[in-house]
Length: 389
Image (cartoon, rainbow, N blue to C red; front, side, top):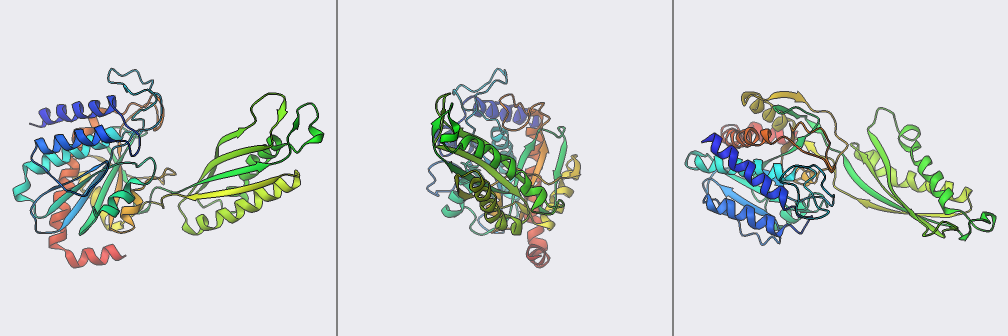
């Protein structure tokens, strides 16, 4: 039976990979997931979602725990060369959400087989729009977290071998914020730069100055990354542009540092622009907060992983972001990494995670869900104290 299910899950993963959809556009993906769940007799909650699916397995009594997968793809042109490559030009499952979906689908099918013996309910989120960081909000607003006692999620880790499991207590993934800087100067002929105020040079100086934020404004023992990812200015070779636009991201695990960064960023860009005779305006766009795992459930998930045969590691801090953090702000739980052994990393057009992780991970999450429900029933007082701590 396990061999048949493993093959089915790989089929589902490839079907999703071939037909990826961007955030909040996962209509066909939602239809496929719904069909696969309904074919197994798994009930779907009528939450009125535009995209995404929430399913339930188990009795109407007892505690509820949640498992989460994300289902959206990225605006990347695939060049992986796999025979099931994306059929949608410029869209690719380059982050492995197709794998995550197949894993949680497998967990749902395995849990359905033992539904009569489950001591509570397992609610499974197939969440849209993780890449836009708003899918978790949609599900929370729709009531997906209602009465949930613990929530668990995963991300594949291309840098880890298949069969490897990693998580950590406390902060795991980073706070994610986006900034945009508009530099305004005075346009001029490129042959007479003295008649203008050069926004290209000013923007270049700002980029260099921003790299001093982590090293000269905060302790070197803190995790902080400032990256400028887009520079746009001018439209021809012989004109100094009036404006240049910069865009980038700030990542940190420390909430106090996160609060201070915009003011320091403003001071730096204002000082550089003023020195160059230009002006600089900052727009700040807060993203999801850091993923902070509940210590009890992080250790619990590691123990169950070891029992399931995984090579368990203590995870390193990650500078990537995850809107799974929004669930953890309201409900205890943990987020974990499972090795996918890809030569190319996340968001790369050649990203190709190993499909060998899918069935073992599905079996793991089915086991984790069952064990978590049993523990919630047998140790409610202790768990309440652990969740608060």
